[in-house]
Length: 640
Image 1 (cartoon, rainbow, N blue to C red):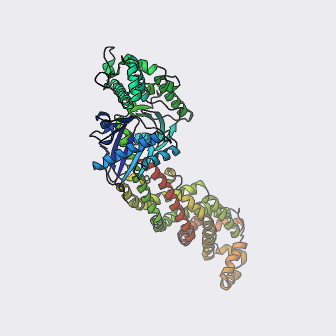
Image 2: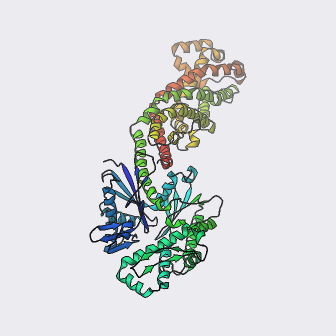
Image 3: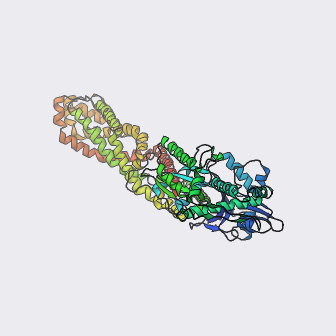
């Protein structure tokens, strides 16, 4: 089964909109139409002959006997609520299929929004309820996430804002939600009982209009007996409100009014009207739904509480993104600007709040599918052992890079100082010299200087050998998902130990190889070379003077190894002879002559120490995967 398209279904308390995104494309989602309109009033009507109607058709079709509006709410067990929601969804789904605007159910995935303040259990219950309407592949996600995704992909959010804190203020018809979003992780900000929806303003206009109507008593009786008339009149109040906030300057004159209109019958008309003075009175009147606070004071308090909670966490949002149809009310922008007054924070209303969530939901669905596929591709790369093979292939080059600086540093920091101490009689025998050199070598190898040298060589090796081969594997993945190739690359010529603290290759080499370098290379290689040099001429005369020529010759003929051991353990010539027969020039010559052999021994021993490098390959592979996993998490936000 292959998902070809994602459908963003914004079932709002006031309006409903649907958008479609093609999964294998990065083209913007397209709005879908019902009744030839991209946005519909959330209305469900029943007609005895035509059956269930939605949106404008339910409102204007003559003969509709039942009409329900503004029915979105948290899932509950009320059978009337459940029937209304499922019938509305099923009717919308049928109309989308009949108009061939969506694929079949096997290739289509629906993403439906809900307020970010809903608990996960409420989302799950809502999802089950909507699936019972006949849409099997359906997921419920927070509307704040959709608003964030729409802003991101529509080009309204720069990368620095994407990875920083963004506060989304979603002013809907039934609720106002505050959500902090950081790299697609949404954190709802609870500010108490959330009944702060713009429909309260509609209701206040409705109550005001009914109270002042010439036939107020008759209207109330009609509404009580015929609920669909009340629904239409409430929508007329919403229209008057929307007209006012779309043209506030026009209605600042006391004689100018934004109006709605609804005909009850030929004698009774319902005409709500508002202007600047009336709206000011409505926004500042006490409302029982808001615990006798006014709408405007409740909104200001909610924004202030959100700001306080962010301050407590030390968070200053780079952006306050305002969405929801009611975000068109300019006073809400002014309040947010007053409270989030820091220069670092930008207030940005969505340019199309009525379509923002539907488009964003379609994008969220596409992003979810593509992000999952992207992570699977990267995981497949590690599961195939390609990375381990890649590292293993370049181990000989790493050894080659390490031998020369290691040999030079060991001579300068262990061999030469040891010989100097022997020359000046601070060390008695060659056995003591071996112990001294081992101690010095181990001390140096554990020093910061050794770590720096090895890390520098490992960095060069990683950048010049591993990185190009690794990029050859990751670049096609980035191209496939249309994100920058740099997303999965390590910064060229920058120490990965600095960029990625988890990837310290040099540390792994030191940990695994210090002991064998000291014991085998210094003990078995360097010292053996020094003794050989002694036996071949550097210190032959002092030996003859101390032990006698005949004993020396006989010893060498009978058992060369025994003589070596004897010299190593017992050779202690007088101090006055040492500086003469092993002067500084001879010492330097000796170090120069043993360096190639020390390099050879280092290469042989490093190459032969397969177990240590097998462990190194595993460690580098694991750390590389961990670092790439981090890169994946940071760059999936770029996927469209």
